[in-house]
Length: 223
Image 1: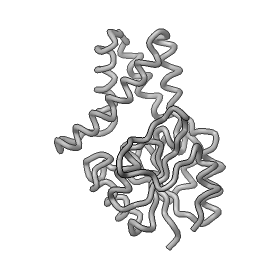
Image 2: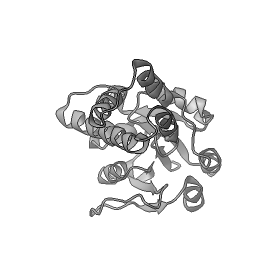
Image 3: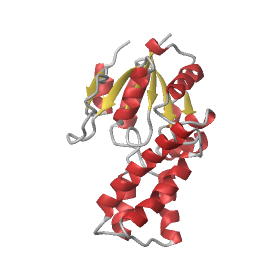
């Protein structure tokens, strides 16, 4: 079987800077720090929900993290502004390197899947809007098993869904916790270091390869 690639979506394929742009319109003096708090809490809430086995959809984690960020930074956003911030997640574009790299990897014979904490319908809509949905064999969502990355169950779910063995599959992600989770579950993993300031956790588990873009990934990966 050809090698299978599982692509994380937000921050790996999809450029979330659009959220920052909207925040700069609403709260110009706090947009950057607010955005970071929102993202950190979004992930923290998903981790905590996973540990507690008290699952809600990722969009609920996102909405609750937004409320936390407003309180933490003493920011008042209207209901309409909050709705706009939540809605933008459905129309964010992909990074410029994504489509050419995915096309090259597909031409090389790799099996491409999108693999996300987001619900399948939301991710499919996002990929269609970004013009890259046709490049994937399928979208695999953690929502099917009601827990979140980096639970070992999530990566097992992906392998079953893609009908592939762990040694024949790679996780592609810009999130270090996702990379270490996949490797811990027996997969190989590429860390996409999109910023030179991004730091990989100094654990005993390190990426199989590190690249700065999907362009570099497409050049390096071979069957």
